[in-house]
Each structure stands twice: as C-alpha cells, then as structure tokens.
Length: 49
Image (cartoon, rainbow, N blue to C red):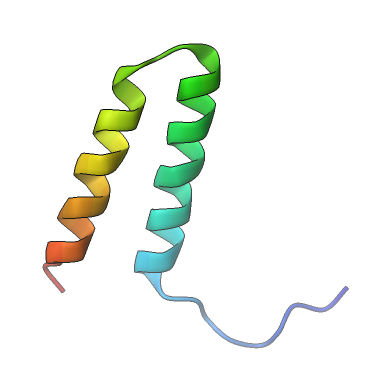
C-alpha cells in the first residue's frame, strides 16, 4: 500500500495523537486524560505557529 505523497501538518499529527491518548486513557480509567486532552486541543487552537 503506497501512502499519498504529502506531508501532513505537524498540528494534525499532534491533534490525532492527543485524541488517541485521551481515548486510551479513558478506557484505562484515567478520568483526567479527557480534561488534559481538551486543554491540549484548546492550546492548539490558539496556536503559536
């Protein structure tokens, strides 16, 4: 399988990573993971490019 030849933005990778961590944390039982993920996403939306 060949991936399309483009470099996804670093921000997109970080957001996906944060969401995945939040989901895994929630499944494991870390209630704080959701709050941390929301804080992280809000921080990304403000953005310091």
